[in-house]
Amino acid sequence: MMSFIADGFKALYEQTGWNFSVFYNAWEAQKYLTGLTLAVELAVWSLLGSMLIGFLCVFARQSNLRPLRWLVTAYVELFRNTPGLAQLYFLFFGIGSYFHLSTYGQNGELPLVSPFQFVVIALSLQYGAFVAEILRAGIEAVPRTTVEAAESLGYNRTRAMIHIILPLAFRTSLPALGNNMAQIVKSTALAYAIAVPEALYVAHEIWTEHFNVLEMMNVVLLSYLGLMGIFTLLVKLLERWLKVPGLGR
Image: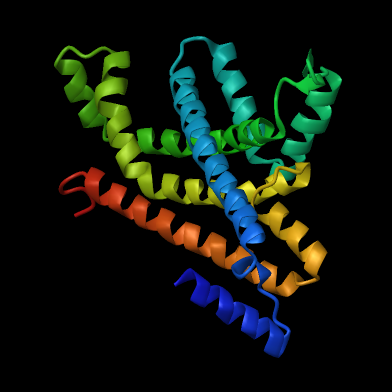
């Protein structure tokens, strides 16, 4: 089957000049799949990081320490209102260079934080701010009577937050969280800017060699479209599984 597809795209190139080399050149196909896999890994780690940061911000906002609440508010406003690419450059070229985040090994100087990790940190910080705001809105949407009922059963504020308020807020916020997660998947392409060999970077290397920019850009766009289709389906299944019975009716 794979050889049939490869022969078909090779014949297409010979007859029309449309060079989808990634489909008939085994080395380039493997290279592109590796880049696409790296993009998925970036998305997964960034999703986990942003959710962790978002939940930590929720608890920090419930703190009695006013400076901590101010710090969280400043973080949210900073990362929600500045471009993601500027944030990535600031972390990679600014902080990374200023603090000289490297060590020495047998092969010479080695980075303590790899470009891959810088992208994960940047995306986690940026979208963690959005998660914090989404969850804040979800918490405010929890009926006051529900909170009062929990308190009447002997729950203190922390226990009520962990066992009742946050689970409800997470479920009601899931559509917005799903949209935020989708943005993370698409934003993994920013890794191209600091030479992380994800899908777009690998595609650029291929079209530089074969001058097939249009063909490779179509491959990249369709790849991300496929990833987003799978991701959207998973989010919808999660929404259905976690749906609160009777909510919204």
